[in-house]
Amino acid sequence: MQLILTNTTIDQHTYWLGSTDQGLAFVGSRDGSRDEWQSFFPTAEAVYRPDANQSAAQELAAYLSGNRQRFDVLLDQSTGTALQQAVWQALTTIPYGHTTTYTQLASMIDRPTAIRAVASAVGRNPLLIVVPCHRVCRKDGQLGGYRGGLPMKRALLELESQVSACNN
Image (cartoon, rainbow, N blue to C red; front, top):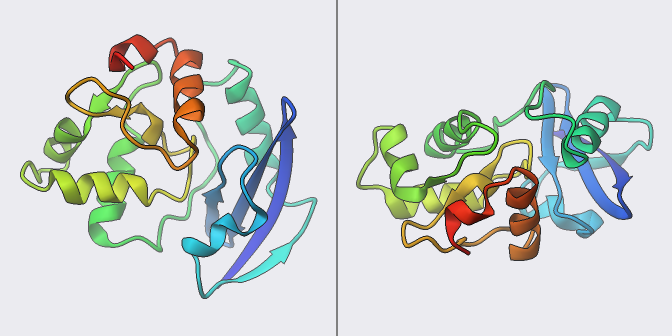
């Protein structure tokens, strides 16, 4: 598998983007390492192309500036297990400005007792922001984890005006 990498700077923060011939496959955390993708695609051959992933970069910039609520770029989520793919698909159905819990997400995919497995799948989401795992909080009202860090999760929820929904 070949992963085409590029980076984009938005509001003085760098985001790494990776795509395959099937679509966008990776969005890195804010100011994350160029090599962050390797934990998701350990056998991929990475090729850096500064002119690649421009549609994804434009949509990400529009989202982060408050001018976009959903993403239209094609996604490649083929590297996940069946459970991960089901969880990632369910994440895309959580509306902008809303949050859900890991328990509710498990019910959404008809696996109500698989809460830990669902939480693990959320944590393995390679497409930060685009597949909105930041919209999932713990049922006790805490933010829960986030690969990009809790300050980034809080900022995304504030952008969507929903940080109070998690009672941070």
